[in-house]
Length: 136
Image 1 (cartoon, rainbow, N blue to C red):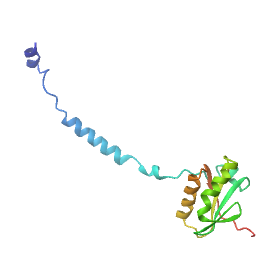
Image 2 (image 1 turned 90 degrees about the vertical axis):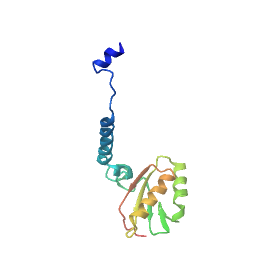
Image 3 (image 1 turned 90 degrees about the horizontal axis):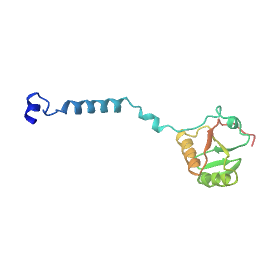
Image 4 (image 1 turned 30 degrees about the vertical axis):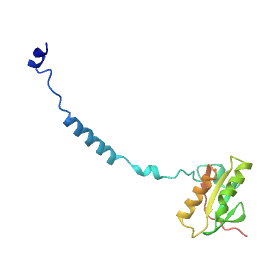
């Protein structure tokens, strides 16, 4: 029976080299076509998207005043106290909304660092807001 199959060409070896080449070409194509920049984005709700966050009413405002000073709900604090302050507020009200308001001259890096620190402390509803001069 085997001799009969070989004579008709059905028992020959299968060369998979072209198949492997095509798999690698497709792999390279999809790697180059995929946009990896999406993985680096920060998910933040803008103040216009949330009814609660349009104004500071009902939200805890975190004002970034300088490299070492902030104000949380109007109370001046050192920058290092941001995490514990957010944790203390969330113990009282876990669904609290936070607005991060950088002063003029505060870099984007410092603003994002404050956002990350508030997220690590447990804040999930965070937005950014423009700086508003207060009468104080």
